[in-house]
Image (cartoon, rainbow, N blue to C red; front, side, top):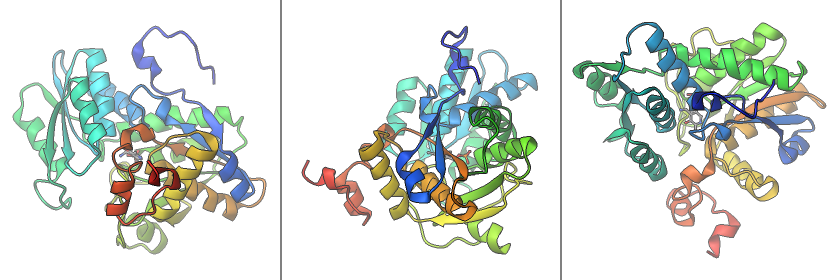
Length: 333
Ligand code: PMP
């Protein structure tokens, strides 16, 4: 991959993120664990890629007209990506979020000029769920397009066409496994499909948090959730269109405690400030590395920046309220 240092468009800042060898996780697994630095995207998360592909797809299909509005339901990161892409291309953005997501994500969306609507968190079957609310708002508004990241496969195409070839080139074709958690499934399915096109022997693994139904689906054929997680942006209860046909070979389930331990270690030992889904992904990558054996090479996704969670993951008060272990260095502050 050539990562140019001059670009003719701000949108070209999306993607071409670097891949970093994670020392602690590699030592723990006895293999190489590489993290794709998606926090390097302009919106500081992996979801900028999906946002760009979805908007470009809506333009190409003639649905999105000059001055139009892009409407989306999101845990926040996709909304941030859409707001940035919309600004760059002269569109407006209307973002619907459940109100239990991080304050930093909501503040960021308002700062970027998106119109923000928050709804109480509900089950997907409830008609007021953030996804259904966003669809309704798009239907009611002239000139609006619903991004529909869960079931719009332009999302996974972003990863098939960008994330997968980047990883393949960055590791010079020497990669044994890839894993990440699922929100929409775009990252796992698209990157998995893309890597399999290069070499179908690459093992693609699902790393599921508790509270999601996919681990049981891929392991036992039954969509069944157990437990819960505070991780934002991941944890899916159904097979989205993006997940359909995803080439998943194996699956792991990772607790918030395990994910948090890696969030803490990556911060203190490697100077990487990440969100919880990244910690869960790294724990999954270690499990995959242990399964594939010594000397294997695994890639995973460092989904977003920890600066987005200063008032939650990095707050002793918040961690205590969630009955999660408090990072040592937060206790004295
Ligand atoms: N981590 C975070 C922090 C996210 O916001 C998301 C997107 N919802 C994901 C992981 C999962 O990505 P995907 O939607 O591609 O499955």
